[in-house]
Image (cartoon, rainbow over all chains, first blue to last red; front, side, top):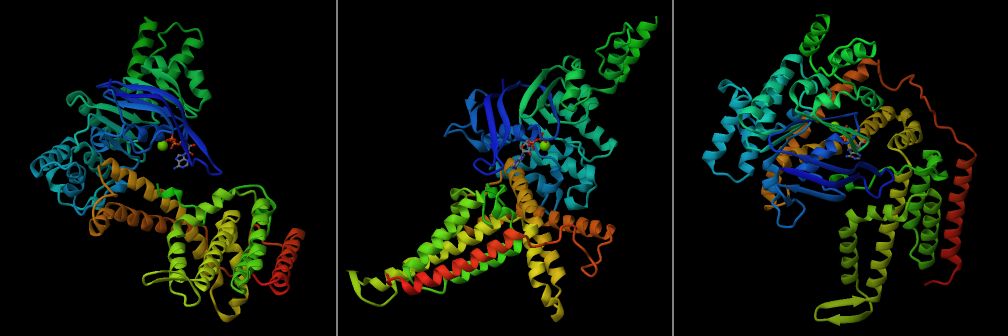
Length: 281
Length: 269
Ligand SMILES: Nc1ncnc2c1ncn2[C@@H]1O[C@H](COP(=O)(O)OP(=O)(O)O)[C@@H](O)[C@H]1O
Ligand SMILES: [Mg+2]
């Protein structure tokens, strides 16, 4: 167990005319070395949920435990939590501010109070991980391309050496090639560095391909939680809350409904092809 | 965090005050503020307070919400009150070493605080019940005669409404950037003044970049929709006075008369 949420609720604008209950009674456990995806309609509370995980927003009620310790305890170190639970916001490239790429990535580690050598090592390590070459180290981050900026911004969080990497819609607004790069990067970090990954995504295809767990949110609540294969069986329920399933899955559901005896819990195009071929034989 | 500022915010509710023509509210608020400075008499303040409370009740804005607007100026209030209390010559009623308190000082400090408080409360009530858009519409209409003096009233109003429109966006943006930098371990609370200013850089640079980007986008969008300034431009919802607006003007006049009467004919307190 690494992060545990117990009966967590969150309210925006408490006491104003537009009070908004953004999360209600959330119970969730993020386990070590998971690759989990949070999906949900816009406004379902995904971003709010992930900001609670590293203490940026404080829950209205309920408790959050990190490695068994209550993060709202007085003697709990928020600084430690922020480095262990690395949060990459939506459009993270909008926070770049330093004059060079290296300086920007080093911002997080220096704030951790590490010594110079460790700061440099983790900075260069993170830049190497995200595939930013040395020729770009001393360039202004504002001069990079969209995909490069995004990767530099992710490196800025990675450089703090988090155990859990939380990303809010990391693919939003990127071209297909850059999307693929980011996903491959996350996959690599998850496999080689044993980093727990939690990401918010709108692409069911990507979720089906990469995630080992899908958490479905609707109106501030978790409505489904489990392996993609299991969650995507509920196509009707998902479509009621404005969500879809991967197109390959949808096709197989359709065939099954028409009375074709195929295995209908396929996630990818490849799987559906083999299922159909198997049926044809 | 930064979102808790209520001054200049709109409080959505369904009330007669909200529905009034914004011009009435602007003029009414001006009359109210000016009236606060025209007398120096306890009865006058009682009338001003009574009228303020009456309008607030009708507006359905909770008192606690309006009073919150006083928080940011609280120190200024205390400071001016103390200044007047200690530095006004007159009949001494209390002395401790070099510190002298006079009746005149007490009276002045009290009246000044009350004036400032009602000035802030009155204008808060106006902004809480009027959307920024309505407010600029009202100003554009009220200042329209200045066009003849070649004052670019429409352009000023447009600039104002854009600026007002951008405030919540930039506040939200600041909030988001601040959180993002805090997620990277930034600390905005400790250190001396110079360190704190330096610590603001990670917020200010991205904020500035984004403001310029947004301004550019907006200019393009306006251009794409053929915006060409004020001449010949009509409004989708032109301001038109209705019965209740004339009634409100009458109430304003009634307030002035009542105030004058109470200040002139009641015994001085
Ligand atoms: N800063 C805020 N102030 C007020 N309401 C907010 C704020 N941020 C989000 N909300 C509201 O909370 C709800 C959940 O928002 P969010 O967590 O951003 O959803 P998602 O990321 O799933 O789109 C939405 O209804 C949204 O309007
Ligand atoms: Mg979101």
